[in-house]
Structures are given as C-alpha cells and as structure tokens.
Image (cartoon, rainbow, N blue to C red; front, top):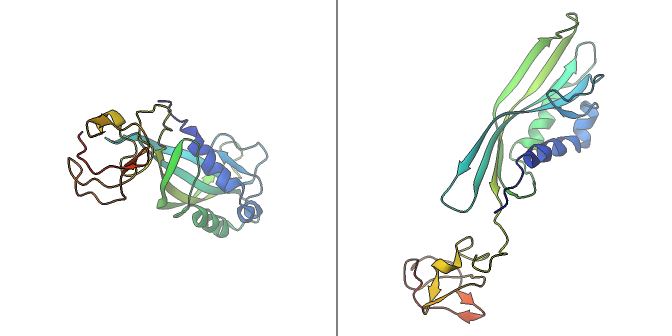
Amino acid sequence: MATPDSSEIDYALMTLLENDAALHLLMPDGVYDEEGAKQNAVRWVSVTLYEHEDVNTFQQGGYENALYLVEAVSRSGILTNMKGAAKRIHDLLQDGTLSAPGFTFMGMYRERRTRTVERDPVDKSIRWFRRGGYYRVQMALAPTPADDPGLLTTGAFAGRPSEAITANGAPITTDVAGVLTTGAFAGQSSKPITANDELITTEVLV
C-alpha cells in the first residue's frame, strides 16, 4: 500500500493561509516556513512544524498528529495590525478544515498562543514582533481504493479483508453495506447487508 506524502499536510496548511484575502491585506509579504521568507519581507506569516507523531492503529492506516507554530511576523518601524493578523490566523485555523491528498481530515485547534519580540541578529536596532499560536493538526490516512477485489470498500465493514468474511461458506469479495444478524458481528446496527445485490442474513465468520 502506497503511503501518502506527509508534506502535503504542510502545503495544505500554508495554502489555506496564503489564499486568504483578509490575511494577505494584513501580512502582504506572504506565507513561509521559518527559513524560507524572502529577503525583503517585513510583514509575513511564519509556519513551522514544531513536532510530529505517526499514530498507528489496529484499523487500516492510522493518523498524523502534528503541532505547527503559526505566527504573524512584522519588523519594527512598519505600521502593522498584529492583533488583527493573529486573530485572522486563529479564525482560519481554530476548528477549521484542511484537504490534503491521501489524507482524511480529523481536527485542527490551538493549544496555546504566542506573543514575542526578537532582536534582529544582524541589525540590533531592528525588532521583530511575532504573534500567533501552536496549532494541532490531525489527519488520518485515507482508505485505499479496492484495487484488490478482496478488500471491502464501503459499508459497515469497509477496510476489512474480504477473505476474513464469509456468507454461506463463500467469501464476500464485492462491496458490502449493512447489518449482520448472526455470527461474530451480530447486533451491530447499520444497513441491510448485500453482496452482488443479494441480501445476506446468514452467519458471517472472521
């Protein structure tokens, strides 16, 4: 099974910020990772992957658990609405959504906010104002399409290998949607079970 590129999540987050017209008015020099800001940028948004964890589950896939530091950055001597920029970042990210190839969105929220002032490492007369927060982003690995006819792709048992499920002693290798009446999954509530358009009400073994 091909693994999706985790950097697609970084790109999706930066694209969300970059494409927002209201944020662009406040931070017109763009959205960059910490080391990527253009040389003459004086008002911009910094996005840093602060920490990351791959969370494996017993189900198919797992999910990506990442913490990003997202801040509006402005140089001293430039009239900037830092409060407004930080609020716009929060409005976009707090309980917002992301779309990244190969992933299914789970959640996004702020864990803590930030507000700092830094001295420029070259010109000591310059200060850099930073305001934003640490935002948690969680994305699940999207289900793999059923190129293998033995993989169930829809219904109550999506993601389960079909060779583990039988009806009347025959493996089910088509899409399954429904509810089981007997067997290991008896009592699970969903929709009627069909395979090849035929109702299945017999025992299902795993």
